Image 1 (cartoon, rainbow, N blue to C red):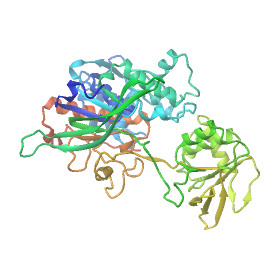
Image 2: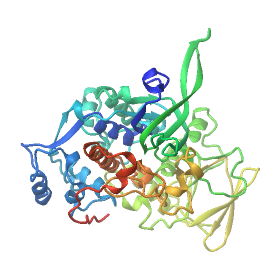
Image 3: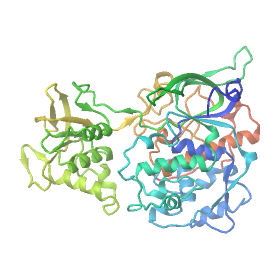
Image 4: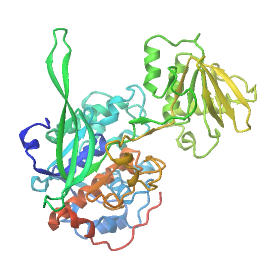
Length: 504
């Protein structure tokens, strides 16, 4: 969609603008486009209590039912109750390895559609298009799918097979792009856009209605040059909306250590920089070791990539290898054999005050419970153990892979005022945006009709971020039915019968 078309640029106020076109934004767009979930008359849910509640008003779509009431008593692997509810309805008992059919049936009802706009930097699918195509997703493939299109069926049509019930990020990105096309959502998507400011306006003495102003730049491809490349311009745009949904994800800004020398050219903060060095032939078995800093899955992918090339690897991380919070201690060995291998390497080939265990994995050495003190211009890195003992290692390159932060630069102070702790930056894992649990409306004062979903509220798995789409679409539908003006909506509650109790 071109944001300079007359229908967008004529000054009308859109009902909803969604910032982010990853799986969160796509799922919400699906629900806002008129696709409506009902309880199927032919199928039932294995949870008898939930089935009984759903059966009380089977004629009502899920969007019109009391979500808090339905959530009561459910338990799941998310701290957000609606995320547990929707996951349970889409993938009943999936945590037990069972493949129950969903009791939901989907109908397209055009009269329920809410006009909306989805803004994204790249094609639909968000950060999945930037991920390495040969790795496998952490989640099972069916956990990555969106309502109304089975991922396994799509893979079968592509004549591809899942590996160990998991897909590659490239396949997932292609699935999301196809999903938008097949469900005819594309008319609401404006790709190639970068949002630069989101501000509240109106509602003052001038009588202008209160709304959100969203401004930014949209890339527009121009004529092709003689050499075949195309000219492109970044054209400013401005749209107004009654409601704004923050769905930007968390892959925008790599986390940094904050130590001396971190900006030196050989210090990198992206797995793709390692891939680039490999493709350029800059690393081989005769290279100085690659230093990988971090104990997450991206760090493990970097270890595997370098080890496969037989390039020596130093691996430094803050936790103990046996720490229960370490992600490798939470993954089933049979389902994730490649990460189990990295965990074994971390455990068996440790640096212990210059005393090594037998070299089960030549060319790899882990430094558990170590932190980086500094990087030096001569490509040396100073590591410090918990005991205070320091080790200096010579490296060819260093990869700092300790997570990432969302880019909310379009909000005042990077959106800190919206976080659980307004004194610290927004962090998807440690300091998410605070939202109401059954509507996903932002709790912070001065932000009416602002919603957040996905990793921004702590949901880092696709299977659970879909619950945010359900909560937001349900709240917007309730407001639409009630005919509430925007400024009154925060005071109008749903029929909440009992408090929802969910174990994370």
